[in-house]
Length: 423
Ligand code: EPU
Image 1: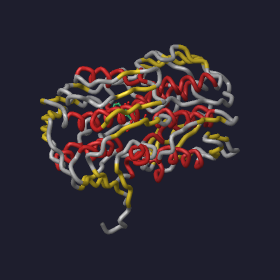
Image 2: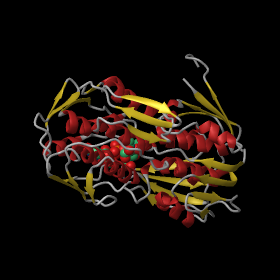
Image 3: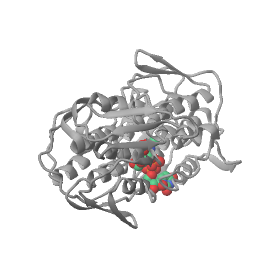
Image 4: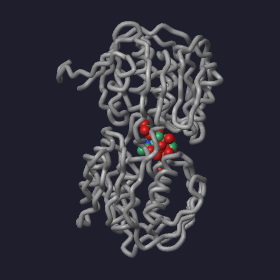
């Protein structure tokens, strides 16, 4: 299993360019199932989850070509409708093909994603809402089997709780449904807006893009399109935190700072100095340590749960006690035990982690448990004394493009190695 060996204490200097957003790319790839025409998506990140989604699409008869840095999805003639467990179990977001398959092929069989390291993560809101569009749903041998022989039919749907992929799944189902669908209490995440813009470019009729109520007038068919996905705001936030922790002048470029407003506000409160341009954030060397800060994760535009773990690492180096509350997922503190192995002082009380800083971190071997937890351990390794080995880097590879290459270009010393199966 691949690992990172990080030699801590190196200063980071220079520019890091942010890749396309994984969580925008995944629904955009699923949406290519909605048309028989080719769809071109330039600049998708080269990360494991994108490869997995391409494999899901291949199982559904679609092929993805890679030409000059763009991904071109071409529909096949196959009417396949089964996304198998072998693929879904490695990536829950595979469930995003459910809406498009039902909308265009009128049937879908998608393995139910099982549990997950960060919480139970059911898909009940997706299923209830698809039933409201007229789908007939049942669970058979661990798969969701969904059928709508005469097509889906518009409806008025209120999500009981904000769900990002739930909103995306229903939006993709609604664009080819008969009549009007109103989706209320939708997620406001920029990735949802990005998908809606791509669907509009394909000919979908959507009102209220960027708001919590989406009104969709169903159309007969959609055409192909070219769509540039937004930059990855979570990758950008991770490098901003790396720059605060270990930087001597870092520019995080090709990002949209406006998507990081909640993080930048908390950093400002903590006394961090930075400056913002239209598509870049400059983080100079910090003259003083950040102060402790408190935050609670929330749906966008609140503080992203996907940046909680990385911020927690920063809190270990801040002056005072930071209180970090996780309000989206019930089990997203697995990095805490690993950070404590590095010497962090953290007490978890229910959904809140109290982080006492600053503490000296001392390199050792730690284990990544999920994508963002892995990133928090890599950040810790950058400031820890001596050598930190982060095991199970495959979690990191699901969502960060060439992280060791980008960090080393800034002056870090991160080596990827694979000691073989027995170490
Ligand atoms: N929920 C339900 N039932 C549902 C759907 C959601 O109870 O049917 C609950 C979830 O268990 C959770 C909350 O609602 O407690 C919100 O979950 P949401 O559905 O919004 O999460 P998601 O769509 O499964 C996406 C991202 C996650 C990110 C969350 C929250 C993608 C592919 N994934 O997941 O990204 O943490 O939104 O912002 O967009 C990551 O990239 O590392 C990652 C985990």
